[in-house]
Each structure stands twice: as structure tokens, then as C-alpha cells.
Length: 170
Image (cartoon, rainbow, N blue to C red; front, side, top):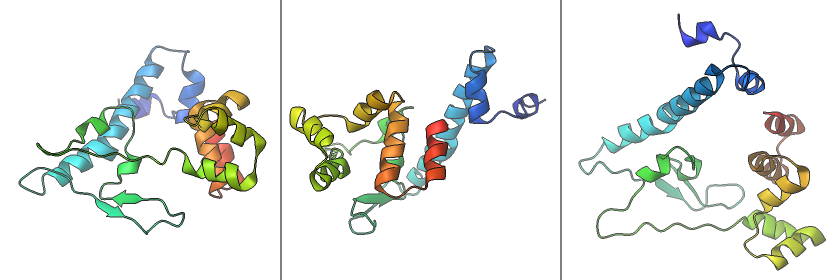
């Protein structure tokens, strides 16, 4: 009997609703997160590292390939690596070198504040240049930060109403 057979209807939204109903539900959720990290990130990174004698990964950096002008990378996509789960801990510079990380610090929202002249966003950034607009939206709307971020970027970059609703309700 597999775990899938035992929980035939066990999508993320179902498990979220059942989270506190049985002690196995959080374990299933944790297992799925770990399996997703392994299958989606760790295994592909290991395979790519095995391609050269140094066992290092050299992504491609794309300076002019995105529609919105953002810097991007692929093989692997460095921006897509999760913050949680230790995947980013695998990224290190060779001995004698340094890894440089650049962050434009919510540049899209800063540009939105400037272009729209929205008094709330302008006030937020004027009072605290390091403000986390996603957390501010989350606190204002009484939702989780991840949801606020997904919805905010979805609005900025044209996510459909159905997809915004799905992200907000997941």
C-alpha cells in the first residue's frame, strides 16, 4: 500500500484543510516538500555538477532575454532556487574567489511608486528605504507574505484574475 493509495485525494489544498486533523498530515506535507526539493533542485544540480572534473555548476547568465528587463540565469535558474531547504547552501565560490550577490530591492515597486505617484507607496519608501513592500501589503490585507508577493507581482506583470485567485487561495 503506497502513501498515494492511502490518501487518494491529497492535494495541497486538501492537506491544508486537514492539517490539524491527524498527526500524519504534517508529515505528508513535509515529505512532499522534501521530495520536491530533491526532484526539482538537488538531483538536477548533482547531475549538472557531474558533467565536469571540478564538479562545479556554471549557469548561463542572460542580460537581455527577459521582457521586463530583469537579469536572468538558466541551467540552472538561480532565481528559482528556494530560500528554504538548504539548496542555496550548495552555492559557493571556488577557493580564492568570492560570490557576489546583487539585489535590486523590489525595483518594480519603487518604479511603480514613482510612476503612479501613489502616496502610500511613496510614504512607505520615504519613511523606510529598506521597507519590505510584500510584508506591508500582507499586513494591510491580513494575508501571508508569500501570497501578497505572488499577487503583487501578478498585478505588475499581468497575471490573469483566475491565476491570482488560485494563488491567493492556495
